Image (cartoon, rainbow, N blue to C red; front, top):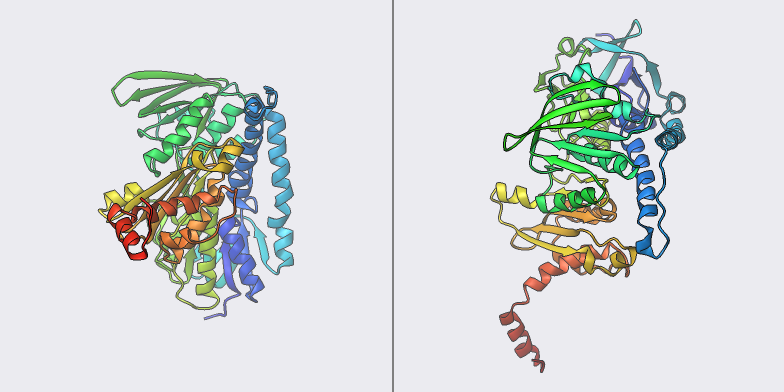
Length: 476
């Protein structure tokens, strides 16, 4: 058989594909990278970067309106969506050079811009040329899933791919979907002056989280003016640009019509696997995703898949983790496997909600022996100083105190969760966090305080009695 032209051929220039390409080239591999759209993928252009930029502008507007709580005269700004979105675009442009074809070519990657498909188990055709490689990596990402709703294809709706192109006022917005994307964007537009309604089929927003954690976010959204219509099934949509009507039915069978100028669909993601010639490559597909083993190999062991395209948790940090697994397998020929248990994530609402490991709900559903401990932000001195007392931290341990999971809802939860990520990954007990010095006054102290709750549980009246007797203590 003819010698393969490349060591690795990556199909898709999003988070997973870029890390594989850059990492492979830096290690001395000959790498080809094929991208049919924009380098940087969904995260840079339609996801993480623009959404967090928009959220920050919205938080600034909210802080201005609520400044009186900090003894500063409040001011209600008239947010200009066009100007805010121009700032979003400017931030994207600042980051774009890092993911550009020029930079990757400087790294030694053969960047090929164009659409292609597999023509066999070891060949990929793009722009009329055939590429052969020892290994292929499918990293084509995902796109917004559009639910089956009568009339949805006859009206102008937005997904995350069009949202940040808006340069017009958004007086009112319907958001279909109460997951992280829907909730983040609902809060952002509400704080920028839009009247927002969230339609969620289930009875709870952020359904992957414990209800008591999600309720903290829901309460703030309502204070921001967001109408949360949980238990509502969207049935029909009609209208024209600027005048959209959505018909729903709630869990009690009642009909409701919601009107708005704009509609955002944020009802999940769907892997991009069409028109890739996967059948010709011998790559199995099941339930709309590429089937992979624990090493991210497809049914064709020379072809790997990484990032959103394999389904599961669709986060940029997971895509980057996948890329590392692929590199260890393809370059170093190590049987590296995907991490399945210690997977952190965050919803960047205000307050933020972050989690890693087992949730309290999951522990109950799986009948796993566990203990739960919590500590509120309102009892943290720094939280009081910052005026950020909403929320709490929660840990899940086994009966011996080993950490199984942790969740935080509150200010900077996405940053604070990483102490638990490390602790759970290393198999630590709550007592080990309790014994570590945490700087005062910081929000991070809540991680020690919730671990302290586990320690204090062991100080029963009988235990205290024996301590007094053993060490001849004189207190009451």
